[in-house]
Picture 1: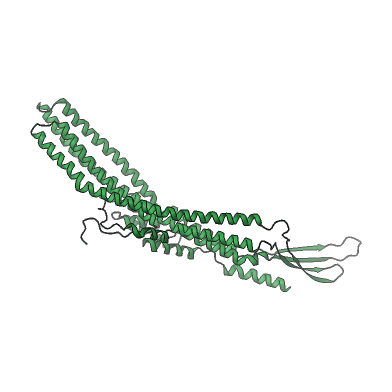
Picture 2 (picture 1 turned 60 degrees about the vertical axis):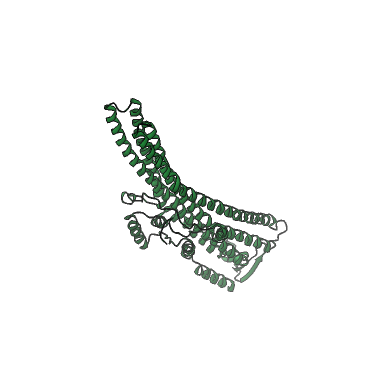
Length: 460
């Protein structure tokens, strides 16, 4: 009966020591995100705090949507991230399960009398407990703990990637709106030019060819505006999905129509590779996964010759009116299966995980170099457009108009010069967009937010 009491005590204590709440794991993940971005995440679980978060989102949307506000809204309201946090609950449940013993098996029997035999009724009860789980308890918890940490890191990395995706979508939308405004301004100028050409044509001062050219230019500008309007809709919806917004009020958010100037002090490359190796959460998650497989392989090797030991006790009350307590034990003999296949599989998976971890580290260094190179290149392109290309195109327009006034060139040359100038302005906007997207890609490669820096030409 002492064995029965011990088993009952163990069964009562083990569940009391384990909690399936993923709140500690979420706090760890939130701290990882905070340390790398300076921003907080929230797990919507149907509590009173959800209303406060919803009010905060509405407040952020009531003002012009800044990049910081867009990222914060995504971290608070993106449904995909909310679903991802449940991976922490799954990993925490696995950790709790790893710390539980297998349930004992109870059995019983009844000896029933047969008519005329004179035999009395007897019975027996027994309990058997598998003790292999007790030996493996610490090892299983070690594996599950490593897997929980790997999950925390993987979830944190997904959150960081979401913030970088928001940056790309945000810059794409702002640039699309800026190009739309540019083209609308060009359309107004084109309509004014067309009206002037029609008046001059009526007076006989403009040929049919020049008038047709003006009309073609005006229609082309209207077509470009329609195309830009479609680009704005697509870019706005891409950002809306990342922010997790729905409903007419939230969808009416207002984003800026002017990209910021490039940073005046982009970070140098000389230390970014090392920062990335130390900060990338996907690399840290891969390392923890390798560690979990290492623990699993070690456990399999250490207990390969230990079968399935079990112990039990049976109480019997015989029809002959005597009672007996019979302890029992069993042990599987590993004559044919010493878990060599399972061990080989785990060792192969461990080597595979190690190789993938090394490959990821190599990729990360390459990603940092490639992203940094693009940031530097696009910074130079933006600067060249601002200092050289756009001013030259505007100068060409002015000189062509002077020659047109002197009747040295036709209207078509003026239109071509204006088209080229408008195209240069559009290309400069797209180059600036690509610069900020490249900078977001560099943050993605490094695994943490970069210093904001000063805008070019800003006062220190």
